[in-house]
Length: 65
Image (cartoon, rainbow, N blue to C red; front, top):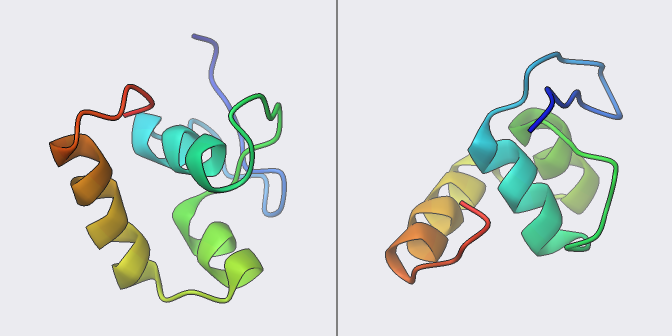
């Protein structure tokens, strides 16, 4: 997978979790990704909540993570 960058702030080399969460919460086929900070701002959700959701998705076997 090629390195992705945040569509909002331009952060380079997003983590697999950041890419996976963008796909999970926005659209699985999206070509645009957000870092955790920008995604939490975009969705008006606390960053800590998103971190908890990542772990939940992983524990449930979501293939995006």
